[in-house]
Image 1 (cartoon, rainbow, N blue to C red):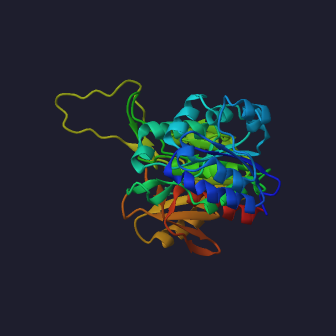
Image 2: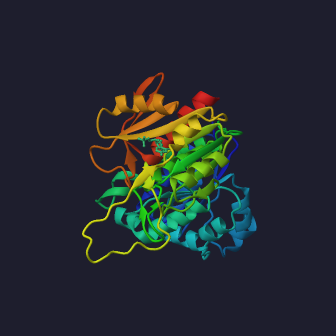
Image 3: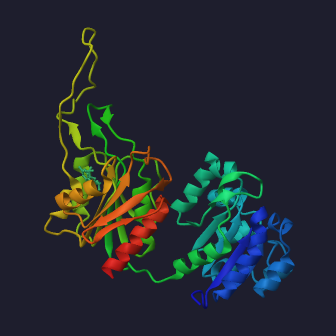
Length: 397
Ligand code: C5P
């Protein structure tokens, strides 16, 4: 039982998925954990304290101002004694409270008083989940190191379809087990390039591309979760810096190469950046003016360094060099050619002929290496990252 000896403080907040907390308690206990439940007022509308208490074989704490609860186990002790605080399900409201440091009931006070790991499993209507307010709050929590487990896609109790479904209790237990599992990449260093590059034409204009940086950041986070010491070298993106990862922000391909070289030596290098192949030959020191009688203008470009190829041939080459290849035709053949031309160990090839991958949540890739070709199903970018890291761990350990 992989959760043996672990104490999990399970905070159950309001939402129809609260009924699944009963199964979650059972599964956590079956995996060996001891579970101390905390129930919010909203949560208590959906599941009774008696159910949780009977399944957890522990008292349920509900009230910040209850003399009995505070005397038995004060909120600070509740927060500190747990090996993991799991808020499942967490409502949009409690996410908002956590992001803003509000503490007006036992659940929110306990998470604010926590100095250990906290994971949340959101469950809400897809429109509420997609709301920029919720997304901004979740991004804030992730940046502070809160683990966000789910939500999943699918049909919802409210009758709508989309992202917002509570992760199945079995999946949450799997995530808890992974969380406590040994870190296979502990002691390893990794660098990840990510995002686009901006190549300046003049002080106000750049040549850019639509890379969002999502895939690269997901890989940086997954490597870090597996215990690696990660440096993320990112071009301009609008994503928050991932927690626990050293982030270096750059603009141009030249800066990205320099930062990458500074991050060496490393055991693992993943090149997920969409580096501009070309940069303007000269960068005007003043803003380029349009003149009345010119209908056209042209810019000369010069080649950028190939960061992946440079690092893969460097003296202090990382043990494992992974590149990406976005292709529209002959995906595997082109990726294989790239593998040998750039001297990478693996190429993750994606077929971009069906439309945009940039900015999307999912990715369909094929892992191409000297050993062969491994097509992966359509996965979220987080899942692609998790699989890649699993392969990295198998190879390097
Ligand atoms: O040649 P292509 O751009 O398709 O190669 C893609 C792979 O090479 C990606 O891993 C990308 O990060 C890397 N690359 C690079 N420097 C460049 C161009 C691509 O590191 N100048």
